[in-house]
Image 1 (cartoon, rainbow, N blue to C red):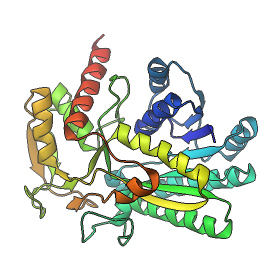
Image 2 (cartoon, helix red, strand yellow):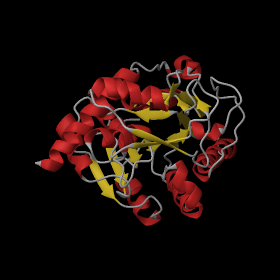
Image 3 (cartoon, rainbow, N blue to C red):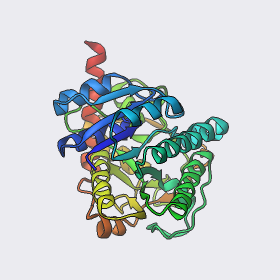
Image 4 (tube, one colour):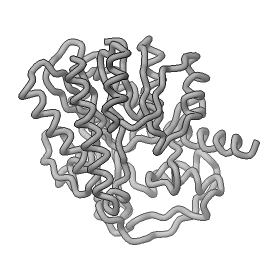
Amino acid sequence: MNKILLTGGLGYIGSHVCIELLNEGYELILLDNLSNSSIGVLHNIKKISGIMPIYYQNDIRDIDLLTKIFKKHSIDSVIHFAGLKSVNESVNKSIEYYDNNLKGTLTLLKVMGEANCKSIVFSSSATVYGDSLEVPITEGAPLFAKNPYGRTKLYVEEILRDLCISENDWKVSILRYFNPAGAHESGLIGESPIGTPNNLFPYIGDVAIGNYDKLTIFGDDYNTHDGTGVRDYIHVVDLARGHIKALEFLRKNSGILIANLGTGVGYSVLDVVKNFELVSNIKIPYEISKRREGDIAMCYADPSLASEKLNWKAQYGLDEMCRDAWNWQKLKSLKKLS
């Protein structure tokens, strides 16, 4: 299981997983339509790793291209990142999210089955839990996604469960991410969304560097220690290494494994702002706005199952996430100026 297809492989998480896999000697094929990434990421992957992966620029819903890729390359396993991923945007573009995230996955699974490639790691999300009544959240918590983005993740999980029942030779790992943050220590790859950032860390970084006048905090009336939303932020490199552990698990096990990838620690928006200010030595101005539809008060993981089954545990904390995110932001801005 050494030749891996990464769908969405040039995205924020996909590119970091790519680096970790190349470091471990895997052979990679990347597929990305560049809807929320850029071709420059591919060249920076080569700068970091010394290896230029095979890359196809196309949409995962293109069944003819997918079929050609699987015929040309003897792919052992797939890590599936490709999908639209903004909670807020999904509320306003629900049909687009269902078409992209569900149709893309169904197309991928159909082609994989025809190619007898039946090993997949799926990029899911803690949004499948909705507004969980209890934290930390275990994998056995009730599933109730509150927005179209989360529902697309939940529906794909159900599809994969049904697939493993109907065809018991499939090997599936569903990784429920909490809140990825930070960047590669080189500063060459990181989170760089197209347009206004939807995630907290790149938004703070843009304010710190001067791209925006202030940070908008959506809600300060949640039932948390300071009124702002609490999340389990996990360093993207820790997250990436979890995928290697999932691939290693699938080598030895069939059926389906579902695991949270998080630190087990919750930080509020204001906690992150204060830590980022300490790391950057820059004051982050902010304003309080009304809550966003689909957002919840508190969400952090119980990661013990990943520790038990995958022998994985997060190594980095909030300091490292802020440090690496700021380093990435500074270097990115310098490139634009040069």
